[in-house]
Image (cartoon, one colour):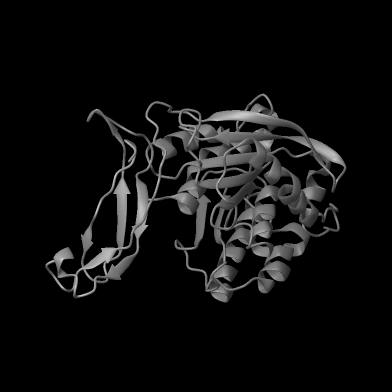
Length: 339
């Protein structure tokens, strides 16, 4: 009954796997931006007595399926907002949280990003004025064109600032004899109890769960991301672990955490992206333990490389913000890529 609603009836061969793709067009001239909207169709047999519906008895029909999507046409860049002085009751401290919303979010008020990503060391992600050494990843320069081209879905990024001196304590799951730490579980509680509800109050988000929520970080933030997915697969379905500090506490993650996780055959098993560079003073202490975690996931937990486990070696890549930013397309394509 609405000028913005359409009905389409399709006939499909028996046992066909059908996904309907659609894209909006204005005046037969201007296509909407971003990925095609995709609708998986469920099939059911027509009763043979209802031959008027089809001329072939082995045809099947999609059950009535309704869908909605929110196209956009002009907005080619995402935008950033800062939630200031977010208080953690777990650590009795506060920090800012920077939120990236994708292209189209401001143009179309009905657009709800299909994915959300929590990223660590938030001050280093988008803005050189807040980044360590003045070198930001410039995440928006990577994800904007990927979303516009339909290479990844529309997603919202939550960049949680670190608190400097307390970073080691918050990003590590166990104490290291040389560096201390060990309160990553409390930090994950802070993300789930405080940060995510605050973002949900202020932004349009999908229903959060392992199908829609991932986490990405580098160095200790990479270790934290893998720890989050490994120990809370009911929360995080994807983990991007860039130059992860798997050396921490004598490779505690590989030797103590991995043996406890469910194999990849379990329905809630998360996807992992791991990477490392081969340059700089930290190269050997990052590359070899990372490859060892990769190998353990394959050999002991039935993960399959380039399916639900990804590894990338950045030849010439260093352990710094510049290198992580320059290869950020790798984890985005691996974890969120769509043809």
